[in-house]
Image (cartoon, rainbow, N blue to C red; front, top):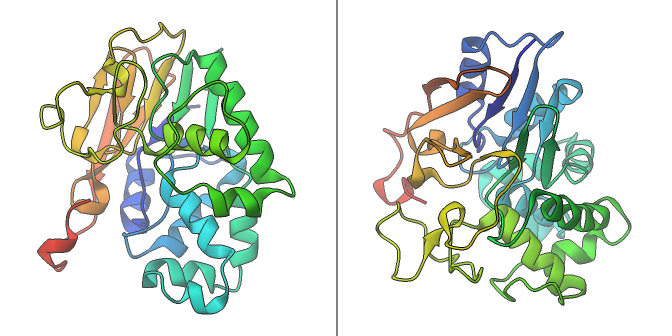
Length: 283
């Protein structure tokens, strides 16, 4: 039995199948942790979503920003749905769209396994959040997504503000939580996210730090595996294991074994981007 965390799929079905073959995934015994962003940009989002849905008894999924955006698109009128890119249109107009999206919105924002010693999140945690805090805040949003208020949440989740504060309430609070879990890369030591900064470390503005290196951050009792930040590359350090290695941009798709004494990383080539116009090859 093995437990594997897998980086952002982003609709790269062929690469996902190659990776499952490389890790010799056994659905009767193994477990997969998907770090979010199952869909968008890869051209095979429908196939990828169907694949992960078919593996739901043997997998754990946390939501990424692209997954939440898909859920929001799924609630729009048909004319509005036709304005999104063809990859997502295939999902929202598929005959099994309702089943897939209903399953997707019931997935987690954070997953923690204290026996195993790992926590999974798509993007990051605020510097002042312990792992227990993260679980509590994620549960607040998950309750909304799984309940009658999910449409209101999806309509109001967009926006870069407000900054996180324990005093926030309602949609402002949930938006701030979602931004940390699904959009964070850089932040200030006081915990203001710089969502506009997307480059590799060293390219950010003065006073900003990768979220996992922010001065004054709390000590955490679990190792964290995450995705989201393709320009960071494979990063296995300081209790942070970032495994979005840009499969959708022609990089690699990465799996990290979580139940091994030694860090075991397996990769396969990502999407072939040779036919993609240059201006579409970067985030």
